[in-house]
Image (cartoon, rainbow, N blue to C red; front, side, top):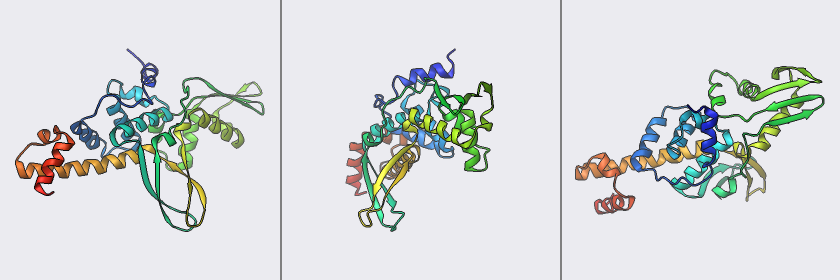
Length: 262
């Protein structure tokens, strides 16, 4: 029986490639329905499982956050195309900006997240690993963001020594913690994507984070509601069942809807 690491290694061979198996409308609605009441981490795994059906949920959860998000970017590209758009407000003048960028613009270079990470500084020697979804799932009982970050960091510290003496991750000075977090960020750049923005009105420049889980789930929700409206109209007009309607090509559904003037 394969353990989580073995499963994750198998998935790593395909993460980043465009998903080759086309996901049917019926399957995609099932994904949307299943994830409705899930927390963001579980939503991400439900989406990823649709893209890589041969992988176990455990193996997908063992992927680093950057690997997971690389897979979700590929899924997004297959489902809705490579172009992304969004709205945001300038923090300086309040002007609303429309953002348009490509998946390639936010896809980080591939990494080797299974390789051990080491940090040596001021007599401290740390061995680290990258956080994954299993780590995030253990943070549900944290009451503050600071507590979540502290616990997540401690979970990713494999070993600590100071001047040859073994210590716990909770005893590390802030400077060492910051350096260690930076080291993990360098090793898994897709886990923390920042988009450069510039306001055309006031010329203010800043960066904003991009969360593929939130973005893709919002798109899936909009698509699902649109699809349910199409099913409702066609079922009400022709008496067809949902499975029959969903098995049609998008072009055929649109054709019938145009005839109905919907």
